[in-house]
Length: 228
Ligand SMILES: Nc1nc2c(ncn2[C@@H]2O[C@H](COP(=O)(O)OP(=O)(O)OP(=O)(O)O)[C@@H](O)[C@H]2O)c(=O)[nH]1
Ligand SMILES: [Zn+2]
Image (cartoon, rainbow, N blue to C red; front, side):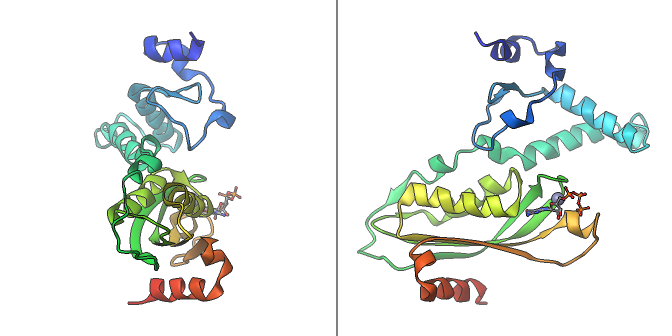
């Protein structure tokens, strides 16, 4: 058996959990409970220990009463921010419907609010997604589009990649005649640290198929997405 897999399933308290991570081995697409691309995933205890270390690093006393529960809270929060790693967008989009009386015009979900975390600083990215597609012969449940936005939001992100991932997932699932995704978001790593610019919106778009070819269609999408 692969040594890392053996350690993940058996050695939960050994020093193996503190092996250095090979960052090149980590991919958004493949993350298991204990092993990520052949890479050990630390257990909760090791993660809480790491939070204590960070608190001490910033000059705090992790043993003072106000901070005793903080490692547990931070680890729970990290699991919440990363819950999209364990969700499969293809499975969420797998159920489609074809009894739509030939409806083949745009389906647009406007203003899907999302909360993500940037992969550079782990700070919030908060914004909205507008997602549209042009069905070929089938449609998908509306809530599933919003769920797919959340799958990718609940991973560490850069906004450009999240935009492309949403579009690709819908392309794969529905083979529509086109997909349009528009995200606008505020990055708190720009607002509350670093350059300290509050209220800046970053806009990213991905258009595929007819949306990429037909400027009138792309304009219609953007006009509808902006509508009150
Ligand atoms: N393209 C892109 N950049 C992002 C995103 N989120 C954060 N960033 C930027 O990632 C960059 C990281 O730059 P670095 O110079 O490596 O890090 P830094 O020293 O912390 O940079 P500052 O934020 O300028 O203090 C910053 O310019 C962030 O604004 C994103 O979704 N997309
Ligand atoms: Zn950042």
